[in-house]
Image (cartoon, rainbow, N blue to C red; front, side, top):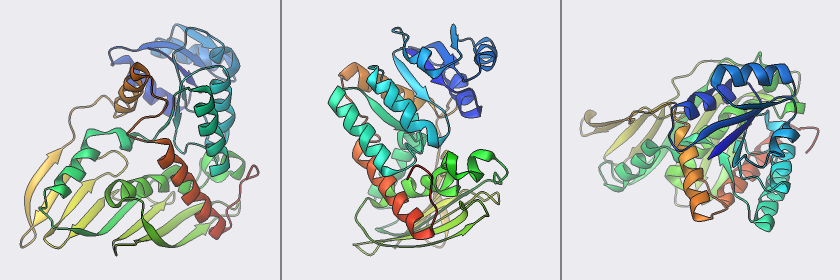
Length: 322
């Protein structure tokens, strides 16, 4: 599978590191709005082709998959161009800047019968699936409460500060606790209570979101670009709780029961970066002729985008393209 990458930032570098150590994929092409940056990236990581425009990469008939690593605000235009040219797409989270854009892309993919998926890596990881297996074993009883947080001091970055880049904490970090809660508690949400702190550009830099489900479960989720948090997720039931180290890339699951005794631990299997699982999921989908991945179905991507649209509307966080 010949992979082309749009953009040359640190997320693109992480994918390049991943592809370099995978089998069954070729580091084929990279594109930037700067030909010099694309050339330097290709030389550093071993891509055989480089381009000074995204359009030129997408026009290359040899590219089997385009990985989009541009800012959130560019995802819609980049992915749409890929689909119109018949290129399968793996698009970084957040999938788009808003739900309207997401719906248009997913409809176009269906119309053209072309694969597209959101690259939210936690959805594809083996340890994420292990969490639900541990819960299903009944060891902590029926889960009732979930907490999760994620925070890095990234407020200085332009992509975080600027509404024109679909900035803010929610789309960059808050999306992970939201997906964590969805993977564990499902989608039957009755009520959402939330609040945020904004800066002078109008984007959120800290937020707290409580999801109340129809069956009485609750998920309390926090994210921030002002502080470095412990990144933990905790799932609590009648008999005990599960601690997940790093909801952004689960590394270890610890099961605590009885008189707060650790009874089991599950470590993350050896990985390149963690990005490889979403690439393998794409390979499986393309081999089977699917246009979506069962790990992150289109309906779930769209639901998440609508949920985040609702939160932003409540907070008064607006993007120019909304």
